[in-house]
Image (cartoon, rainbow, N blue to C red):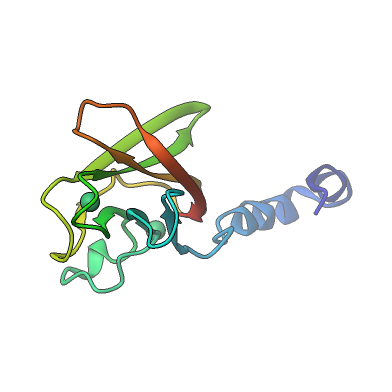
Length: 144
Ligand SMILES: [Ca+2]
Ligand SMILES: [Ca+2]
């Protein structure tokens, strides 16, 4: 909606109602998966959970987490997952590697608490080692 028109028409009392409107969650949290682009079967994925609904602690259930998942044990590659989001115009980065092969789940980490409704850009890549370049990167976009 056009906020300028609303505040121009309504009185000061109604403007308080506008503050209430702004606290309504903008967009529901999403879970998204980015897939590496090396072909089928793929080497790995990066998973972003906008809410961690299965967390034991109820206070953590709206927190975000990131996982790197190695999907191929015999490709001599590890999997790198990265999340990027903006806080007051500044890009924030967080990454995790899955370095211990496939078939044993993903490597997961809590992300720093991201404001609900924030767009989070996910990247999943293969690497030869942690310090090698990123290869076959695939992308996805989630909501915190
Ligand atoms: Ca969340
Ligand atoms: Ca692998």
